[in-house]
Structures are given as C-alpha cells and as structure tokens.
Image (cartoon, rainbow, N blue to C red; front, side, top):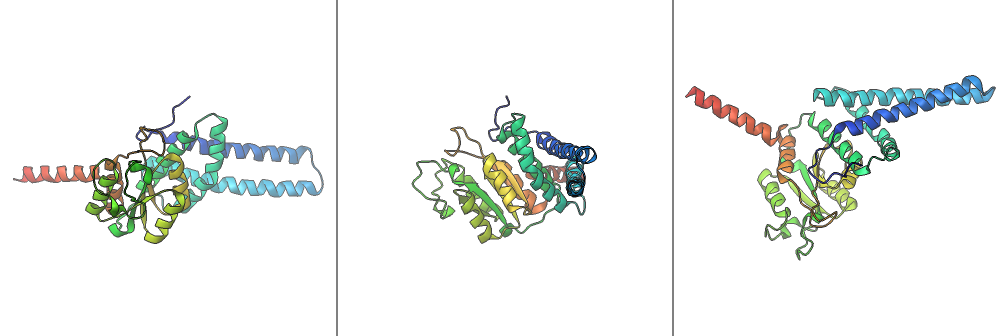
Length: 278
C-alpha cells in the first residue's frame, strides 16, 4: 500500500490522469450498456427515453474527452492550447469526484490522488504566461505553520509576528516584503475565501495539506493557483513547515513567468556572456 505523501515527496501526475481516463472509460461502459438494453429489452416510449439518455451521455463524453485531451497535450508540450483552458477546467471539475471514488475502489489513498491532482494543476498553471503586479499576488498560508505555543496571533494580522525564527511564518513574511506580495495566514477554508474576496488577487500561491489545497483550488477555479504542500514532521495541523524556496519560485513565476531557478540560469548565462565579451 503506497504511503500518503508528506510535503516534499514527489507525486506522479499519471495517477490523476489515469483515474480521469478510467472515469471516462467507466462512463463509456455505462453508455454501451444503455445501448445494449435499448436494442434488446425495451419497446415503445422507453426506447425514446433511453435514447435521450444515451445522446446526453454521448455529448458529455465527447466534451470531457476533448478537455482531458487538452490536459494531456498541455502537460506533454508544457504550453496552453488556445481555447481549451475553460474546457480543461470544466472537465477536471466534473471528473474529479468520479476519479476520487474510482481511486477509493482501487484502494489508492485519497491523499495520493489529491497530491497528484495538485501536481497536475501546478503544471497546467505553469504552462501559461503571467506578468502580474506584485500587489495582486496573494500567499495563503495555514496557521499550523506557527508554533502551537506561540502567544502572538498572526491570523488577525501577520505583522504581529515577533520574528523569533522558530517557525516559517517569519521567512514567509520576509519573502512577502521582499517581493511586494500579500501574505495571509488563515485558520481554514472559510477565512481563506474571505481573504481572497478582500485581496481580490489575480493569482494565489497556496500552502496547505492535500485536502485543503484541493478544495481551495477547486473553489477558486478559474483563478490560477500554485499549491505547495506543507511538511508535517509532528503530524497534521501542528508545528508544520514549508519549503519557502518553492513558495518563492511560485511567486517569481507569477511575477515574470519564470521560476527562481530559470532566473538564476538566465543570470548565469548573462554573466558568462559578459565574461566572454571581456
């Protein structure tokens, strides 16, 4: 049995894509069953009702199949195909519950499926081009990043942090100031939605566990979100931490369409050219 992901464990995108494909195959099987019944069992007006159901399912399968094809093509070519973005979002939203149920039947842990979905979402987001004003980017962090015995309440105001360096809130605060982006620490989905309404961001870098990240990405769709899983050395919801470098890369991507590593490689290339020129 695969062990649930904990933060920085690499998750395969093919788990989620495989489950989406299996979901469509399941619907096709239901469709063929309907056609078989239509041809062999029923007569009179039952035939027409069944024909309507078959026609509806056929259109549904056609639409979500195009959307799923768009997802696979985007992941394969690492670029967005014009006109397919909305259809991809709709297909993933429709098929996700079916993929989740199918995964449970196959005894695949929900956290593994959700991690795979988050990875697919991140890659789809990174296939697009962004150049967003820093003030329109929001980092959403969970309050469990703060040490459980810290007396200072940062969910009301992040500036209440006393920067003792015991948790990653301090590093995230410094990152937000350095990049000029907004930072909010939330206790759950309700407060997260409130922060999104207040800040009206054009893009979000969200830090959370598999469940909260998945729900948040689906809730804010079609707003672009890059999810970063938190790390839970003491179990869920207590003294968690996060790879701040990954958060920084996600912010850089929304700012300039490049990650910190790509920017670093560009700078290295530029400096090398300068040295050769001299």
